[in-house]
Length: 144
Image 1 (cartoon, helix red, strand yellow):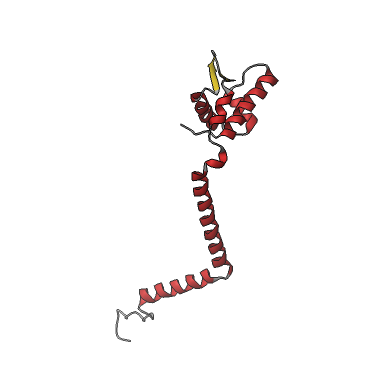
Image 2 (cartoon, one colour):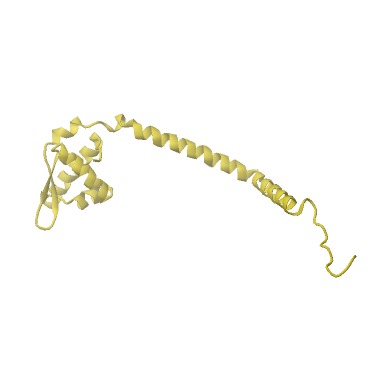
């Protein structure tokens, strides 16, 4: 199940309240996703997490699923975004390593060293293929 931070929970509950007030009816998951700028799939997962703690009530009608605010105080028991550092640290480490690799590649292509290495590799392959120097092939019809 998707973990929901305290901030995300408050954001989703606020979107439900705003859309309920503006439209006069409980909003759908897609309407909430559109308002807060998240993908509907992510909002569905987060709503399921909020439904587990009874912060959101999902009402199934004949045609749609509507969202209503349940126990809004349950959101305060969720972990704040700042405390969810495991993934953040891994992402920061990945970004740092990716930046180092980009800098190394930029340095390699900036000084033209890659072209020298490419020419040297071709020279080595050419030398290994023909034994250093190309020899004139033997004449099959007679002595030269």
